[in-house]
Image (tube, rainbow, N blue to C red; front, top):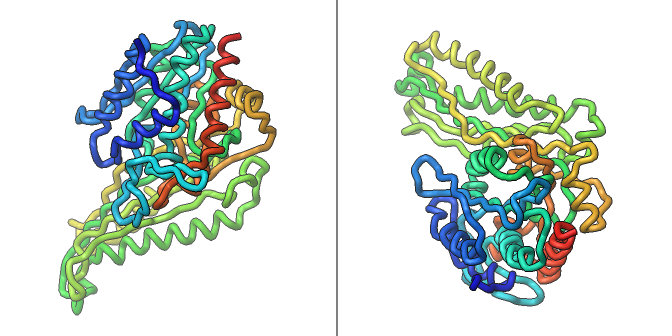
Length: 387
């Protein structure tokens, strides 16, 4: 007999796993696999290189084309430094809200998707639900591309992928791409009184950060297209969030580290921005080497998340609009795994319960109303797949 859990009970179970991105997600994956197996659903894992994290995907229902992928991530952001009023890994109901880390982003959706499986099997769906649960979404959507690629190759082809990030159950058809480039500037240490013969890694890094400032000014002044005017802001942004380097106030810094980040509007290519940054880096590096040939700038990828492009007559968008009744046009500036599924040939859309404003916050919550709306949506999806 299969493991019987309500959506609320499932969310409570998922929240109880402190699956923060800096630890293994295998305990929560083990539970999800055990649950799906108990309903006769075979699961497949795609591990990371270290073997301590895994994606999980499964086909529930007939092995035919035309099903729907329900995509969620199993990791959550840390609670360290956040002054919670309740235990973040225990669901607490208060004033019409369910509090807990991941209730909104996005174990609430995960719970609704997982508990839909036995309902769908009992209903006798004619097209399958495909569950897709990833690792390390919160640190750059790292796990999902490997899973999406394997699903596209080995599973019956789904007609739509619904990525259940919190959207207040609206159909979000587009988002910006995200690109992060780790930057290591290696200078040459001298006493700061002899600064002219040294190379300060921090000063050279500042030139690259000033380039980011100038790109932001330039981008803001560009003309807007209809495709980008819906975004906030409607241009590509360049940003450095943290920086570290140097050893003392009277020594030119030997090392400086930061990540140059880009949030790219859909009609621009992340690869073009990468090339533009690399060109600026080589220019700065050449000037450094004229002072000391051993100085350098090293680049490495931090993350590369494709944007979600609005689709013309997209099957996923049409399905979600039919089930929700939402006819508005919605895009977001944050990144999700939707663009990665789209890159593998799936028609993709974002639609999930909860407000993104609550994601990553202390005392994160989802309202009972939104959680119920997610359950209603899933019941309607099951009926659609049964007809």
